Length: 329
Image 1 (spheres, helix red, strand yellow):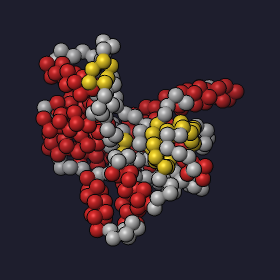
Image 2: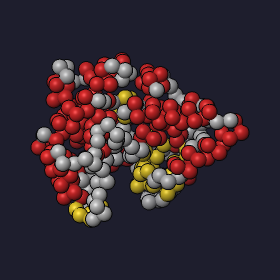
Image 3: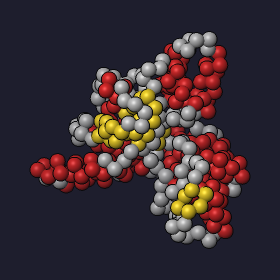
Image 4: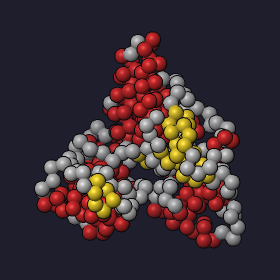
């Protein structure tokens, strides 16, 4: 797994796994709420960072199965994995460029994109997409603005501020078109195989995975929580912001990053659980509605979160273990 992870991390800026397809005219004509299965080449990420260790585990597992499978049985194996994908229903927004920008499922989609690359089987897998909105009739500036305003794309704090500056100073919809395109391209790659590694995002995702199990929240909550605890976490590790990510990228999780995924994971949990502002952010990010508890009873999702939080803080909860759960999509 280490070899695959190192390759995924170091090659992300070098690979262009296949030529960009022509704009999908059929996709651009679909109405909102339509369900359509699309090849990975027609999909566009909506975030620029994921936990590469999680992706590497998925890739290694499937590659191992494929390598052990006789050529005559390989189509059946691929069909089996396609059947698993058929149960998904990921949200995406059709953009003026003809791509469907996906706001969930980045780890799984990245894993299958890498499988297609390693085995040279581009276009093999298709993923069901629920069209949340169709912005193909808008200008690029208008479409991206709606993505950002509706929280369907994740940008770093600096990029969000730059976007607001462009938006507020524009006298026409396309006045800052080039600047906005450069901003988006710097934050979010075109392909899923080019997404960067972010061990902090992965650690926060693991913690929220058991804390918010079965509780719906706004998209990208792990990034927003990560932003809030980042300075404290880096200070705890004796470094400045950016050092942890740099060291993880250089060492591929083999040393320093492995600490974050084990002992450091408890540090992340403590920073989340003991910060009232972070807890308030999580609670406010929970979507309204009822959730089913572990006992099969229904109660408000926010009330379920508060009761689960109380159990965790008092040490009475044995249902959630950091080492075995994940919020990775």
